[in-house]
Length: 119
Figure 1 (cartoon, rainbow, N blue to C red):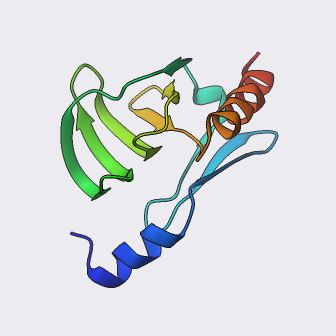
Figure 2 (figure 1 turned 30 degrees about the vertical axis):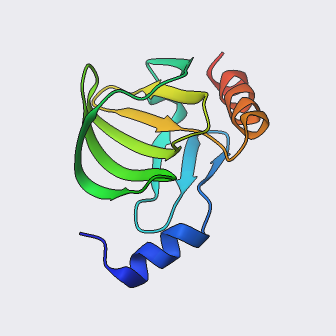
Figure 3 (figure 1 turned 90 degrees about the vertical axis):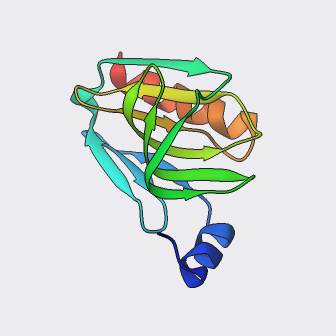
């Protein structure tokens, strides 16, 4: 459960994606995550996020961050600004990661960077 101090931190800190030669790093308060580029099984842009259950994270009318169980995807990590599609859906061997930027342009830049490393 997210307390008030954590909620304030989440409300005022952006989620960021960075990529180095071997890893994708998602910087987010309390729920940061990283994974090896070679662990990416599939990647695509989607315009909606399915319904699901929050298992450990935070969700407001503006964002969802943390661990979720999504219909049709199962175990997933979300780093999304809800009303700002598209979203990048990254399938790893044992989970999905969904992320987008604050703007569609930022999301497209993330997607292009990922494509450059995956291909």
